Image 1 (tube, rainbow, N blue to C red):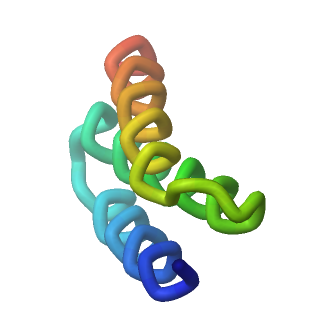
Image 2: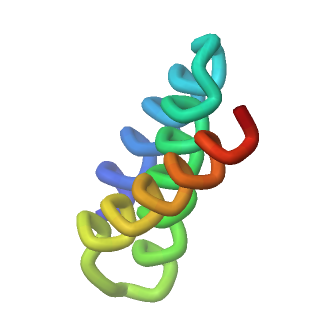
Length: 63
């Protein structure tokens, strides 16, 4: 699970350098959601999906 969380964090970092707030928000949300779920011992994939969705919405509003 730690490996998935680290990969998600790296993907989130890569997304932060992109110009689109929607993609950046989705990347940050996915990394954050995966990290939280990994710390809680839950399903990392579900956390990443929920975080990406929330981050994309926030990124779209911020744009």
